[in-house]
Amino acid sequence: ELRTLLAKMYLVTKSMLGYEITFNENNVILHSSYAFDDEDIFVFEIDDNNSCTLKSNEFVANWKREIDLYLLNGKSVPAFLSAITLELYNQKTYG
Image 1 (cartoon, helix red, strand yellow):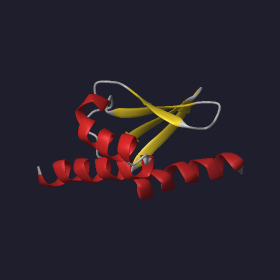
Image 2 (tube, helix red, strand yellow; image 1 turned 135 degrees about the vertical axis):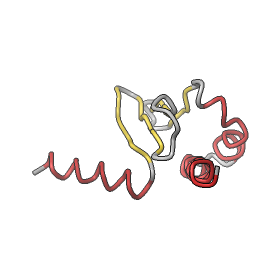
Image 3 (cartoon, helix red, strand yellow; image 1 turned 60 degrees about the vertical axis):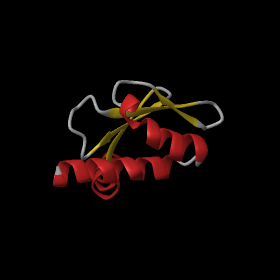
Image 4 (cartoon, one colour; image 1 turned 180 degrees about the vertical axis):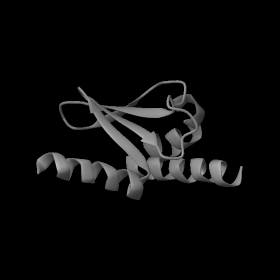
């Protein structure tokens, strides 16, 4: 029952929010449905106060403007992920 519910939540989250979400120790790993490569992921480290920090990787380096605008200035992970989703969607759909 719980396993079925978790599997359903995983699929619904991916289809509605556009991100495959996995957990690894203190990290939340997000892979966009519109990503071009498997390595195109965002890794957020969650600390003891439940605040999250985006860890640097090659993919993250491509999103400096969005990081500055939405994470650093706006302090909004949802706005950041939404902006990335729209940009990747446009790149994949319209070239």
